[in-house]
Image 1 (cartoon, helix red, strand yellow):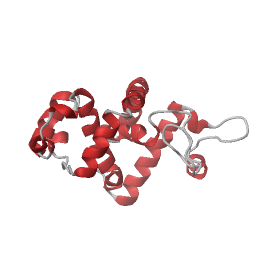
Image 2 (cartoon, helix red, strand yellow):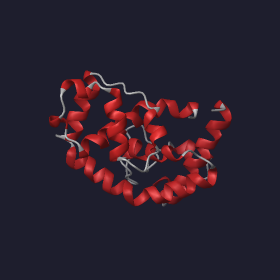
Image 3 (tube, rainbow, N blue to C red):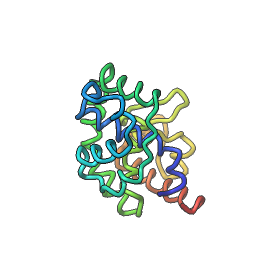
Length: 177
């Protein structure tokens, strides 16, 4: 796995477990199951068969009280929001995968868009990052996106995904992993 993606690694783990609990409600699990790494690996693999078992097997299961709290929070209180994000992301994932494949970017990095914006092309952070990939203006321009009074290509999911792939490729060259 690439070193630069490690900063998103825990978020990716959280999403995998979060998605798992969307299909397997937490109320049905005992405390020992909540802390059992093998249980999560096997159940996550069954729930998300599209992910190779090797990917799931190698993910560290850092299950603690904080993770359990957020799993409950996102599967109960924020369930509708997460369902909306999942539905929206399903529209974009085939495009993300195709573009990332062109650039030789690992397939699992397409889920960064879920973490960054919930796959919302109109998302804007308080810091000024915008679009599905949450590019800051300077970074977006550096990777070929046009931003002016009339147009902001950070919100174009195809163009911004190409820019994200270029950016991830650059990070790979910098960090070598």
